[in-house]
Length: 288
Ligand SMILES: Cc1ncc(C[n+]2csc(CCOP(=O)(O)OP(=O)(O)O)c2C)c(N)n1
Ligand code: SF4
Image 1: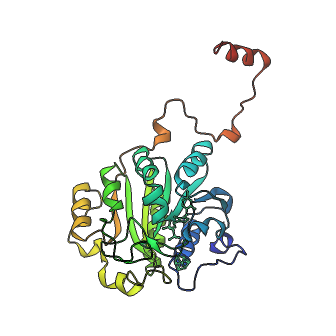
Image 2 (image 1 turned 120 degrees about the vertical axis):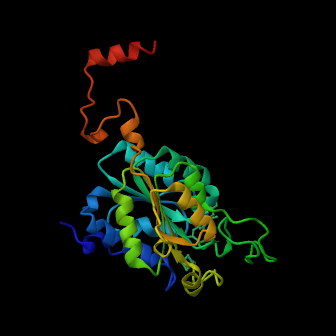
Image 3 (image 1 turned 90 degrees about the vertical axis):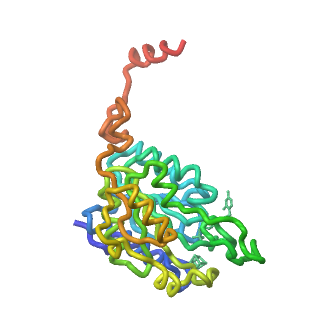
């Protein structure tokens, strides 16, 4: 059985020292081992950004795609090979700006996979521009006088889009993050795990200290019930989105691939799809 070491490779991350993404990398490796995966059962598909490099830093199948397109790629991988555990990942710019359309539709489609967003409220790779997660007044090179646009609330959007698994954590809470990723992998459907992953180089507002002072955990809410969507939505809104833990899970809905008529259980690669010449001509005749 694989251990956490088997999910490590020789590639040295070129993230800045202290970047929150290191914890996400470690949590994915630990979670993969804890749920009993082997590296060849796991595919990590990422978009572009500092965070997007993560697919090269875990020993598993990996695909570093294009900006904002990790989800179409990851959904394609899962549909082609249902035997793989698929994790899509990237930054808040990747998933909630250029890729937001894909995020909403992936949420409502509910294919069995996990989406981990490293949310640092800024564009890190391109050296610090405002993202859709930046707060009003946030000053960067692209908004020198402060952002005037309202920040997106991705978890509220996910809940409103029919999400079946919504969780949030913080790079400093690696134990909780690991457990949430494990639950996300085990969940039968699309799981969104948003991680507050500080950018120590460009975001001097949303720092580790800032998150420690401002985050609230669902465990602090009396009788919190992650099966209650209205409670999840209300609690998120009351906490200004700064809520951590398993926020919502609906175990009753089947994933997309179980609902599509005729979609076979075995991965394409294991299916006998060879046609005889006669079968080929019969098939082709349907299109004449
Ligand atoms: C189609 C396209 N548009 C823009 C870019 C430039 N670009 C690269 S990464 C990025 C945003 C990075 O921010 P985020 O996704 O939050 O990831 P981070 O670097 O903060 O981890 C942008 C705008 C690109 N590579 N491709
Ligand atoms: S620029 Fe920010 S997000 Fe990118 S590696 Fe450095 S600390 Fe991390």
